Image (cartoon, rainbow, N blue to C red; front, side, top):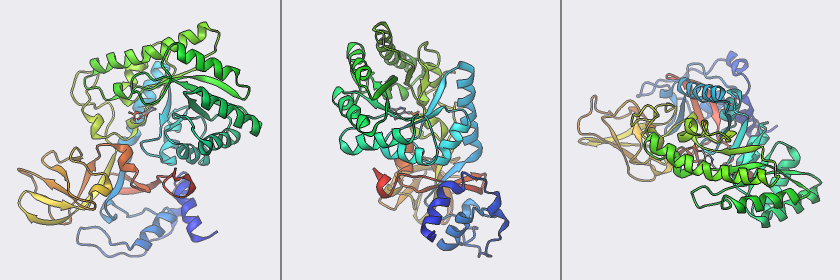
Length: 422
Ligand SMILES: Cc1ncc(COP(=O)(O)O)c(C=O)c1O
């Protein structure tokens, strides 16, 4: 095994296994840097990660910008969601689009998620490759590339499912499945309000479901209807109304299908914003929430059931660690997280409401303040709460898992390079 392939393997499977076996080794003595952290060289840090030797490694030792996962908040979020699903008898099939990390996915499954939803075929490949089952691809294959990859995944794992919204794709997928000698499980997607994919709920859904039933090498697993409009609607009551309307359309399709003698097992949709709304709707069997595990500022203020403006059902566990790299002007410093870190003016500085975030350039961001206590100093580290998880995690290969300031693990973000990139 080459060193490169060894590192790649341990990045995926090493942290899935216990880190304990690697922690016996000692790390080379390191100098203290001006910021208070140790100055590990790139090679030393990579070697520590490859050995899963995190002893003495703190946030202050890390190069920035980098992703940090607050283990305590993350674990609490998983528990909150699984507790809710357990109490309400609702199945969670967590969406991995916000992180694309097999280690996080594994933690979600350990916490009770019955499988995973994926946004791209490469995410499906990454998750099945990491040993996960019960994957639902929430977009339909189109074109020979994705159709053949869907068939390959279904051949590898019979629990894999893909969405369809068009009889042309149903025909092509059936043919490809027949050629491979397998059956592919499909879910008929309903457009319940976004206008980007899915059949019109009602008779169109029935017709496509019938078409699937006729296809010899496809099996209808259920119906889907995801309302992105509902998920971020501000105010819980208003969100409830939008979600109930959207899910109502989906349930109408379900009812018409059943009346027509079409068995519908899975009825899936919903999001972090509607988890405690959709679980109360009779007929929904599954929730596709994803952001709940990590959270971002887009969700932070959509309002909770208790009536507050804050949506504090789940805490922010993912942040971008950044360093102050220049201080020459009053009320402002430059930081090393800019456009290439997806930094946005709507980001927040964790624990520092007196600071605001501005986007400055590719590798530069800025923090501003009217009155800061204390004022940021050159070399200080701050953690940014990202505005959009999907966009932020898309820039990074790994996440440093921390208990307070101590690094305790490193989780990988996959599907970013090689054939799995798209
Ligand atoms: C099809 C689908 N299902 C579920 C989700 C999960 O939403 P959230 O991260 O808001 O929980 C998304 C998010 O965009 C989605 O596109």
